[in-house]
Every structure is written in C-alpha cells, then in structure tokens.
Length: 131
Ligand code: ZN
Image (cartoon, rainbow, N blue to C red):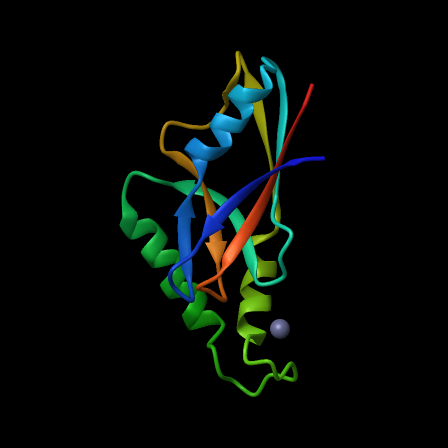
C-alpha cells in the first residue's frame, strides 16, 4: 500500500506546499535512488510543481485558473463544483519526482503543491517510492 499523507485545506481554492511531508516519507523508506510517485485520489483536487519562493506565484496561478474557469457558468454538472473538476484536470493528479541519495531531485525554486479546488476538506495524497 502507498503511504497516505493527510492534507487539511482551509479555503475553497488553495495551494499547499507538501514538499517537506513528501521528503519525510521518502526518507522513512530508506530508499536512496528511485522515483517518488505522488498521487492525488480526488476529483476536485490536483497536484503540481512550481515556484515556492514567492507566494505571489501561487496567488497568480489560482487567480488565473478562477478567471479561466469561473465557479458559476451554466455547467451541466449541478453539484456546484463543476469548476473544481475542471481545475483539477487542468493541474493533473499525479507527479513523478526523481530520488537521488535519499532526496527528492527538485530545482532550486521548485516545491510540490497540493491544489485544493473544492475545500475546505480533509484530503489524502498517496506517496510511493519505487527503486
Ligand atoms: Zn462534482
């Protein structure tokens, strides 16, 4: 079974840096070299890697997604979260990150972000390191 990280979100739309939690699970496996699969088992949340140094980058991403996919716009899916499903598909629901010497191989400014599009909720992120 994969490791399941718990992520609590506090807004309808949010991007949460989970890099240190993913790294902790990689370290716990003891695996030095491989690939870390990070998978979001939800239909209204996603995952992405982007800049973690300037929080305005995530603010811009969320603002632009909301502009492109407004929350109320005559969608056929009538649960009130049609935009959340679309945003989740735009971001994608999985990542693969290389692991070398027990560390996630990320660029200087890169962080792994859980993307909430229908919060606040309790979410899960599956992590599995393959060597
Ligand atoms: Zn729905």
